[in-house]
Image (cartoon, rainbow, N blue to C red; front, side, top):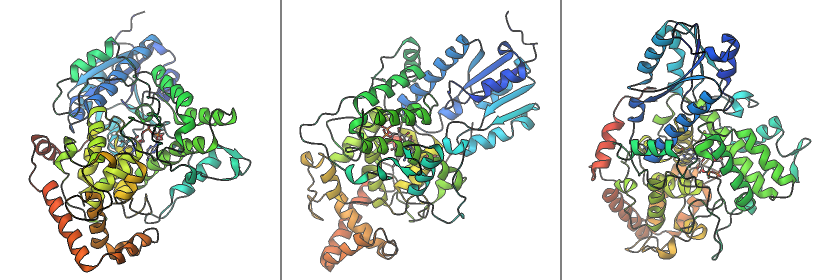
Length: 535
Ligand code: FAD
C-alpha cells in the first residue's frame, strides 16, 4: 500500500556518518510506529555543511555515495526514505516535517559536539517529540569502564587500553593478557626490507550510482584532490570485503611494519578501514573479534593482532573519549603558543623534502596517509615549525577521507601538536631526520642530507628540531619523557646554536610567511574565519 502524507508516522533523521546496518533508531521507530511502513527515514546532503571547508573531493564522493547506497538498502528493506539535497539541515528537516507531520522524530546522538547541540534543540525548534538515542558507534560510549579523572589530570592511553581489554574481554586469559604482555611495541618497529613489496589494499570499481556522485563533485569548488581513480568501498558489503582482504593479506605483517614508511606502497600493511569505521559501515567490535579469531586460529601472530586491536580498542576509543572529555573548545587549545600559518606547500605537495612531498601528494590525491606519515612526518613538521594548531586541524579535516571533528581534534591538537597541555599525549612527538631515515626509504632520493644539522644540504627536519629544543628548552626539560632529547643540546656549541636558529628562522619565514602565496591558501584562510555550526 502506498504511504500517504496523512498517515501518523515516526521519522528518523540518520546522519551521514551513522550508516549502521542496525541503526538503533530503526528498531526504536518501528517499536513506536508498530509497522515499518509507517517509519520515514530522512538523509540530508547539506550544501552549507559541504561548503564549510575545501574538502577532499574523494571524501565527498565516499560520503554521499555511501549515503545514497544506504538509502537504497533501507528502501529494499521496506522503509520509506527521503534522500534530500538542501541548503542546510534545518531547511531539509522543515520540509520533511511539514510533508509527513510525524508524531516523533528520532535521531542517534551525533559524534560531534556541534551536532549534539543542534540535536538537543530539535524538539523545541520544530515543535514535536524529538528523541536522541545513545550513540552505538563507539564501545566507550556503550559501556564506559574508565574512571573520571580530574579535568587537568592525565589518563594515559596505555591504562585506558588495558581497562578496555578487561571490560570487553579482548585477548585476555582470565585476568592476564594473552601471551603475558599488554603490548609488543618492541617487536613492532621495523623498517621495510629492501626487496619487500606489501600487497595493495582493496580497490572497488565505481558503480553507476558512485559515478553519478563523481560527476557531481568532479568540479566542486572549493575542494582538494580529484574524483579520478576513486576506489573506496561505498557499501557495508564492500567494507567487509576490504576487511577480509586485510585479514587475509596484511594483518600478519601489520605489527612489525606499522611504523615503517616507504615510497613503494600506498598503505604498507595498514588496514585502510578508518573510512568505513567512521561512516558506520563497519563496527569496532566485529573487527576486534575477527582479528582475535585470526590469532587463535594461527592465521596471524600475537604482535600483529595485539597491535591492530590496540589501534581500534585503544587509540580510536581513547581519542573519542578525549574528544568528549575536552569538548567544547579543544580546537582552540595552543599550549605551545604556535602562531605560524600553514605552509602553502601543504596544498600542493611542492616541496624539495622527499618525505613530505610523498606524503602530501598522496594525501591530496587519495585522501589517505597511514598513521606514522600523519604523525611523524606531517604533524612533526608542523609542531617543529610552530604552526597554529587550529590551522593545522582544519587542513587535516579538509584533506583526509576519514576526517570528522571527533577524531581530528584529539589527533591533531592532542597527539600531533601536543597543544592540549599533554592530556592526550604525555610528550610532543618530535623527531629529527635520523628517525625518518631509519624508518623510511625517503632520504635516499632526497636532495637534503639527513646527517647534517645545518648548511645548504641539511635536512630541514634537523635544524627545525634543534631550533625547537632551543626555543622550548626549559619547558622540555620539565617533561620526564623528553629530558633525554634536551640533553643532546650539550653537543651544540654557541656557533652551532646560532647557525641552527638562523637557518630555521629563514626557512620558516620563507615557507610559513604571513601572506598566502596561492589562491588555495588565501581562499582557505578566508573560510577559516567563517562561523562554525552543525548545519
Ligand atoms: P590502521 O593503522 O590499519 O589502524 C586500524 C584502525 O585503528 C584505523 O582504521 C582507525 O580506525 C583506528 N585508529 C588507529 N589509530 C587511531 C587514532 N589515533 N585515532 C583514531 N583511530 C585510530 N584517524 C581517522 O580515523 N580520521 C582522521 O581524520 C585522522 N586524522 C589523523 C591526524 C593526525 C595528525 C594523526 C596523528 C592521526 C590521525 N588519525 C585519524 C589516526 C590514524 O592515523 C588513522 O586512523 C589511520 O591512519 C587510518 O588508517 P588505517 O585505517 O590504515 O589504520
